[in-house]
Image: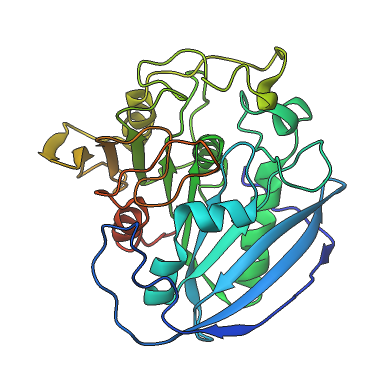
Length: 326
C-alpha cells in the first residue's frame, strides 16, 4: 500500500530571491527560445526527519503563488541536490512553465553530504546497504507540498539520473497513488521487480553510448568505483535497457509500439494502453552516461548530447499527464 508516514518535520528556509530570465538561453541546450519575462523564484533549503535520519532537499518554486505541478529530480549515485540542479538544468523549464522543482538528497556515509545514493533495491552503496527508506522520504516531501497548498496533487512527477533513474522506477511502483508519471534517465531495472501498485505513465531515456549502465545489461560500470566498493548481497546486474519499457508496457496493458527516428534519437511509443498510461522509450544518439541537453555530472564524466534535451522532452510528456483516482 502507498506509504504515508506521520513524520516530524523541521524546515529551514534560507532565502527568497527574484531571478530574471533564469537559464533561459543556456547554450548547452538544443531548446526553443524562451520568453524574456522575469521568473520569480522562491528558493528554500529544507530538512525533514524520516526513519531517524535527517534528510535534506532543495525547493525551487516558480509557481508565483499558485497551486502548481511539482517535478522531483533525483541526482545520480555520488551526487547531491546542487549537482542535480546543475546537471539537469531543469530550472530553465520550471521558470518558463511556473513549476515547483524539488531536488532531494540521498544518503551517504561520508562527511559533507556530497557522495549520496538512493536505495533502488539493488543499487547503490550506502543507501542500499543500510536499507534506507527513500520511498518514505519522497512520500513525505509530496505530502508536505500538497498539504501546504503549494502543489497540485494531480500533477506530481518524478525523474532521476542513473541511480536516481532506478529510484524513479521504484517510486513509480510503490507510490502510484501519489505520483502522476515518471521519467528515468540512463537508469535501469533488475528483472525481479514486483508488480506496481498501479498503472504509471513512463518516459524512459537512455544513452546509445552508455557504458556505465550497459544497454545489453550486465554489471554496472560503477562496480569498482568507491560507490560500490566490495560486493553486497543486494547487488544484482541490470537488465537490458529495453526491459525498463517492457516492465511498464506489461503493467499498463499496452499494445503494439510505434517507432520513429530522427538524427538525435530513436523513439518507441506505446499509446492506447488499457490503463491510459502511455510508455515512451527514447534512445539518444551520441549520448553516454549523461543527462542529454544538460551538463556533465562531475569532472571527467560523459559529455551530454547537445542535440536532444531531456528536460524539455520529459516536460512535454509530463504536462499531458494528470493523475486521476486509481
